[in-house]
Every structure is written in C-alpha cells, then in structure tokens.
Image 1: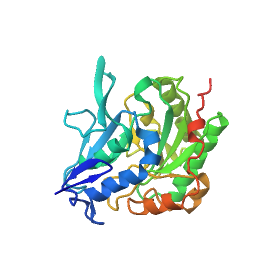
Image 2: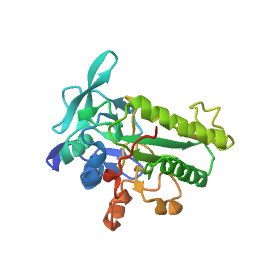
Image 3: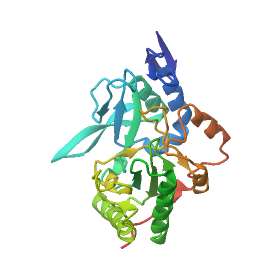
Image 4: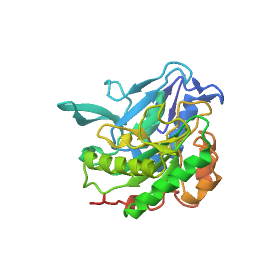
Length: 289
C-alpha cells in the first residue's frame, strides 16, 4: 500500500518506527509536514547528516551523509569541502524534501553550521550541554544560563532548545563573516573559561572519565563538517522526543531535554502565540576581536 503526504509517495505507511507509541511512517510524514514552517529555516540548504532507521528505531540504524542517487524529490546533493576536494552531501529543499525524509525512514536530522551558498562561512554557533549520568537537569539549566550570559557579554544573542536527549543546546546566530576555525576557537575559549571558573561543575573534554559528575560543555560541534541536531528534529530514542526551541522564560518549567515528543509537538505549536525564537533571523552577531 502507498499513500501521499504533501505530494510525497510513502510506501509501507503503516510501518511502525517507534514501537512504544506505535508511531508509523505515516505519522512521521505528518509530523514533518506539521513542523516544516518552523524547521525549514534551520535546515533548508544546509548539508545534513541523517539517521535512518527504515525498520524502526529498535532495529539497525545508520548515518547517511552522501546521496546514493535514489533519493526522493526534494532531497538533493550539495557540494562541500571534504579532504583535498569536495563531495556531495545531502540537503533538503522545501516542505516536500522534509516530508520525503519520512519515506527514507529518517528519525534524526543533524545539520551543518553553514549553508550551501557559503558553506565555509558558518551562520550559527552551538554549545551542547551534555550532563553526566545522574546529574540533575537543574544543573543543565544553570549551565545554559551561564553560556547565555557569557555570549551576551560579548554582544551575541543566545537562544536555547531542548535536544530530545539529556541536555540543552545554546545557539548563537552569526553574520557570515567568520570561518569555522575562528568560530570554534571562540567557542572553545568560552567552554574553557567556564571550566576555569567552576572546575567542579564543567569539563571541556569529551572523555567520559573526565566528565564524572559534571557537564560537558561541548564546543566541538562548531568545526567544518561537524553537525548538531536540528531544531524540531525527532530523535531515534524511546518516547520519540523532539529537539524543541523554547523561550528562556520557559526554561524554568522544563524538566528534561526530552520534554517534548512527536505527539505533543503539534499541541505546542498550536498553542504558541509567537515563535519561541522570535528575532533569531535578525540577531546575527559578530565574534569579538
């Protein structure tokens, strides 16, 4: 059986992708169609890395970055630097391209920090706050507020979102005037300053041993070719959580990085009076120095 959602033909639409909720490929396509107006500004025209789980999240999943030549309409290739040359990476065009990800069994969308037209000039910086197992979420919220304060002290705007996992992302939109090395260098300096000021709370190294009882201030997502989970992307995790932009004043009410899921996100969007990231598009800042 096939059906069509937003002009995209879905085969096996009743294939269950999240068994706990019984969410199907049809449900995933409807989700992408619903969030497209909010999600596309953050993913369209960007190189992507996709987590595909064609048999559902509990079966074998795999990352795909490069086109294979059989992608649905709206899922395209873009040329990006790779090694000593360039290579085609996946991207989406329009709501049709986003919905087409459901046909591919894409349960996670990870995006570059730059767009295809100036791929070596990033337009957003991401701090991934990843807590050690057992560390309370209040500590993560305080860490996010601290990153915000440090960025704002340097004249940058900061936005926050749940990741659909344990932590939070703090995102700063940038003018496309800096290279990835400059952005990553600044992000590293922020992370290391946080560690220097509170070594009992933060760590800037990826080592599991180093982060015991602490929050990993992950600045590594700011390098050329690195990706971060995209706003409004679902996750291939129990409960079908969604990476969800929120307002800073909402943060106090959030009890975890997986606070929203594929089912609940529609209700949230319907209830919103304004974009939680209102002003994001106009908030492009410059790195200091």
